[in-house]
Length: 310
Length: 318
View 1 (cartoon, one colour):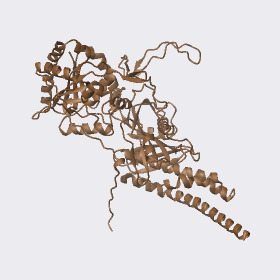
View 2 (view 1 turned 180 degrees about the horizontal axis):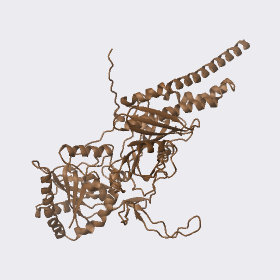
View 3 (view 1 turned 120 degrees about the horizontal axis):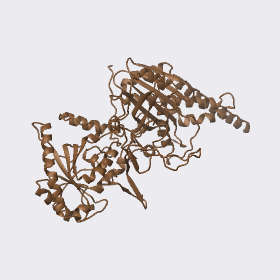
View 4 (view 1 turned 135 degrees about the vertical axis):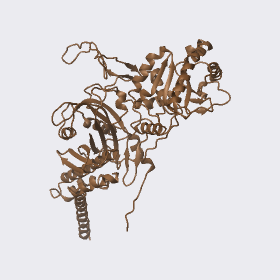
């Protein structure tokens, strides 16, 4: 019927970026399972998938009571040794039965939640992307736990270079005529609706994680620039406030780095409108210009002081 | 210039899952504990006499399922060297083999129970414990981590603690435990997975038996590799259990140790243990890639496997 997921993205609670070996240790969430790591075009490490069992109401916009039983797939990842994500999703399918079956039935279909009765995909998609009621499936809490597990690792020093809120992206994916819609709700919540051709594959979840990562980067950079109050305070102070962006964020922009070729057009269309990369580039230019202007000012001040001494 | 299709791969970014060779069925001819050994060789002979007809019958039924080909049936025998080690391989193994031969049975593989806990530095029991996905009670929506009684696993919701005083000061009344997937009435099962004394963990017999079933079904991997490979026997059996490989291949002509399905021929006294084993196995999440691999493999030779792994396991209690 549809796939629903939620990705949480935040800054790793560590003073500097962590090396690949630490990322491997931090993400070892399952004995006997390798942490997958890729280095090109950006360092990326992802934990093994884990399952969480659920038996609860699913959010429906019509408020109809839809019960689902099954498992949610989750994982944690670290990008660039700096950004952490907790991601969960479940494939919602109609149950062939009208009552709950033995648990082994659901474990034979990892990542599938089976719903009883007359659920409509559109109703569930609307219900999930609006604010789901508290007693309904809570993918957010599950993703938050996968992010917290990483943040609580004893290998991290918990001295992040700046404070920034975590962002939540809720997504639903369905099969049909390709379309994508990203909506910004509050500062921290976004929803994404994807219609893709063919069967759902985990590559769609990868795409959502990649979009969530870049949306968070953009938000973080905006926040840092806002906090610097460029023009509202002396240049050197503003430039110092921008330094964390240069040290920790600017090199992380790598759109669609791990996105399947077949799904790349989704990224490209979002990049045309609203134009993620355009905005990012203009912000990066702004940060660099500020730093450059400030450097020039410092240089000329030093030169002036030198001339006066002669 | 025409466009060029570039492919780039990183070994560390890809998952590799070793595939296991498979028999059609793995038959466990027996499970030997100290008390059986102490009862003398006659107890063992009697066990094999009871088992023999079932082995013939299972072989024949698999032969019907794969007409024109040879049914691949492997047999195995498990010795408890974990809870109460006894005797030595040099003394015990020949005796077991002789007793089996009297009933025209061949033991293809001999395994040590302690290898289900740990073998060659791989803690198989931990590996399986990490893959338990608890059967959720109704109203479990993921907002809180699963409720766990450390070291226990159940198939439902436990009774609230009798006598516990709630915030309002009213003592809670007893309520029955409830099986999650009950049909009318509950059969609530709560299994102890392990206990600890002086910092040392002892896995329970049903938990090790669950690991044993997963090994026989070829569904476990450690870092993508097969955690246990049978080692061909040497001419003489060693004088202590630790020197014996985890799984010894006694019959050079045997079909593979792991199999699409398993059959265990057991005394009815093991019934509660096996109920516990099934309760555990119903909550083990086998790797999705491994499940697909085994399904593809069996389908390629025209064998359709049950989806749920507990349905691949059968028993004869005799």
